[in-house]
Length: 348
Image (cartoon, rainbow, N blue to C red):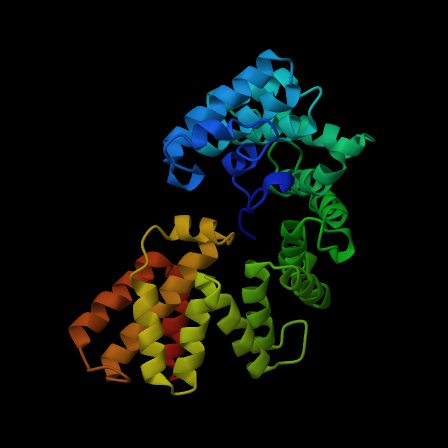
C-alpha cells in the first residue's frame, strides 16, 4: 500500500476561499464596481481588497476573520503567515486547529512535528463541540494514516483500520471518501486480505465519487478479485475513470483495447498518455495516488512500444519501439518487468 493523500479541509473542499470572502456580508463591493466589476478584477486586486477587508474585521475583534485570512494565505502557499494566524485562534476555531494540525504534521511553514499534528487531530475527534462535528471524519482519516505509516503514532494496522472505519462511517457519502478508498486498499493487502470487503469498500467509495476506487474496481472486475469476473463492467469502470482523468485507468484501458485487438484505438489513447509530464502533479489534481498514475503511463508506454514493434494500428518502427520500451522501464520497472514476462510467454 502506498502513501495516502491527506484529507482536505471539509468546509472548503472544492471551493476557493477568495470566492467565499468576496461574498461575505459587508464586503466592499463598491470598490469592485469602480470602473469595473468583480469578474474584471485581476486575482491580485481581489486579494488586496480581501486582505484589507479581513484585516479590518480582525481589528474589530472578529475571530472568524483570523481563520479566513489564514486560509487565504494557506491556499496561496504563504504557509508561515497562515500558521501564525491559525495558532492565534486554534483554541476557539476548530477549522484553524485542523489546518494547524495538517501544517505541523507535514512541516508546512514550520519544522515538521508529527506528534503535534496528531494531537490536533485527536482534539478534534474527541471534541463534543458541534463546531468540530464536520471535521471529525477527516481527522479520523488522518489519524488512521498516521497509524498506518507510523509517523506521529506507533505503527498499527489494527488502529489504522479502527480510525478508518470511524472516518468511513459505513459508506456515508458525507464522511471521508479517502477513508473508504483506504479501506478498499487495506483489505487488498496480503496481511489483511479480505477481498470481498475490499470490493465492498471500493464500491462505496466509487459511488461517493472516488476516482481512485473507480480505477481499482476496474481491476477487480477484470481479474475477478472479490467479485465475479466481468470484463464489460471492468471496461466500463476504466472508461468512466479515464474520462475523469484517472491515469492508471487510462493505462489499463490501453491494455484492454490491445487485447481486444482494437489496435488503432489502443494506439490513439496510448499516444495521449505517454506525453504526460509532471505525473505526480496530474495525479494530485485528480485526487489520485501518484504511484498508480506512473504505473498507468508505464503500461500505455509499453503497449505503444509493442504496437510499434509489430506494426499494429500504427506504422512499424522498431527504433521508436525500443525507446518506448526503455521509457516504460524508467517509469515503473515492475510494470515493465511483468509485461515483458507476458511478452515472452506470448500473452501480448
